[in-house]
Length: 272
Figure 1 (cartoon, rainbow, N blue to C red):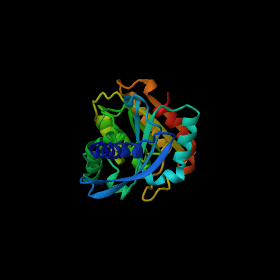
Figure 2: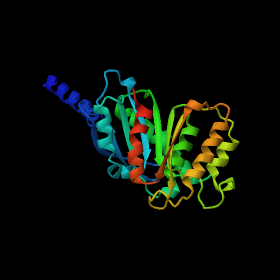
Figure 3: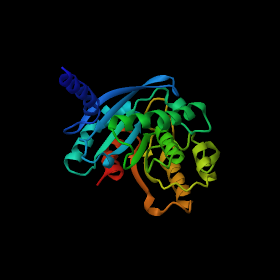
Figure 4: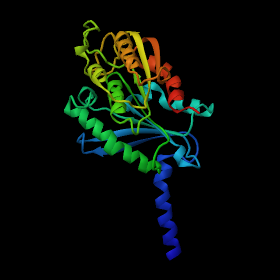
């Protein structure tokens, strides 16, 4: 009886890990986490490779707008790259958005953006580590689309102690159609310009020449020009080396364009 009870206890101790991190093949599952910072139940889409023998080899990529994973065909792209042995062991977490323009922003400038930053740092990150069974991921990347791209950059800048890479797709660095030289329109631009931090973070940017992102409540314009200006400012920081920035340009800012760019980003973020 005692032996049977032991095996039953062991079985239930192992199951959560196998649910979160597949024991074989690339898997996708839906999860949720209540956030006291955001005051809502946060839906998560989790995609991961099999568990490596040494769990300290696991990497993590957190995306904003996880509700777009289906349209992006994230799992199909991820699975194809893994089968081609182009990716290391990695967990991808897509955080489903609520009110994007409330939660995605620059911390220190808006309460909701502060709350989203706190959600990532104090709730999501510890939760994913626990469920993955790791004390520390080998590398952590954050990424986002449109306004979510600004949020990803800001979070990476604020938490360079744990985030080594940031992917920024069609970020709304300019929020109006005014001349890009009028940098007062961009809070994140001003924050970067005034910063004296020396983060050991690498940055990957995508920007299309035409159109806004097409995501709900994301009406940015001049994305390519504004991103170019932003990248130049980043390059002017003497502590950022040339090899730490990748800037990919395309024709449009759309789901289709991001889908095309995703393989290059994923390999850059979590390749061998």
